[in-house]
Image 1 (tube, rainbow, N blue to C red):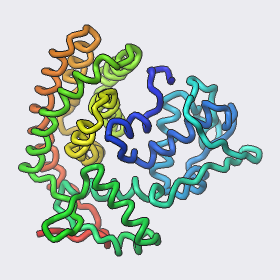
Image 2: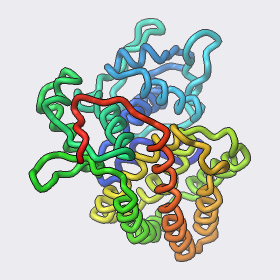
Image 3: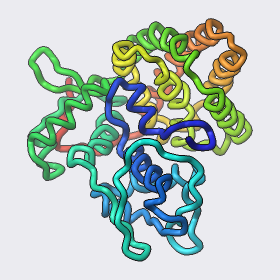
Length: 340
């Protein structure tokens, strides 16, 4: 367990999404955090963005994000030179983790499955563009773009379907629907019907230290509202809507919740492109009210607060999407065909 009482971000995400695959940086985070916790990566060993990217066969962006999250969790320390040094482990890992072999300070990291190496980037690129239009996903072009087999491309698309990012149209083509006001409204309606019920089921299983950790992060974010960046907002959203709800033991319900949570994927990019749309993010006090009511044992009131929060958030999300589409123009990708 880490200092906030969590057993690893990626595993919580998998649980909350009914078995869906976590984002690429979270997979890297999980492996490295587990290896640090087991002592496979010894205290003082060096990690760099380029080495992690090369050894996992990924781009630098998810490697950078994984290392930044490990530093934020206190597992890595900024090196006096380039990169990071492994700090003293702050939690014990109970899951089996593949150890690594090391030669001096050079690390040989466990390779991810082929589809996993590209999944996070593909999800990011598609979800980011659904704010602008709907898209048809061409498996053949996807395979060609990443120089992988059609089987790998098919695996990626299947997991995009699990995450609610793509679905089949009436011609059995894979499409990523546009985040139009109507579609966003429908997804939010599903969320405010399902998530409060999941919260009530999750509440008896929540560790007290988990709630304390979430509240502390909300307090820190509120005190530093002007300095919050996109990843900070992502983490706060995931605390409530993914990790906390992941304690709900109703698997079919969590699978149903995973569909409208495609909104959370799209929001990651909206926060990065236009993080200061509302000045201080208005969801911070709304999240705090929910957590405080859970801490006080007022579960029904917390569920009501979550429902109101989601109903209010719908209009804010639509406003943010409309602003971004006027000001940002993402580049074309050969495996995405814009729908009329």
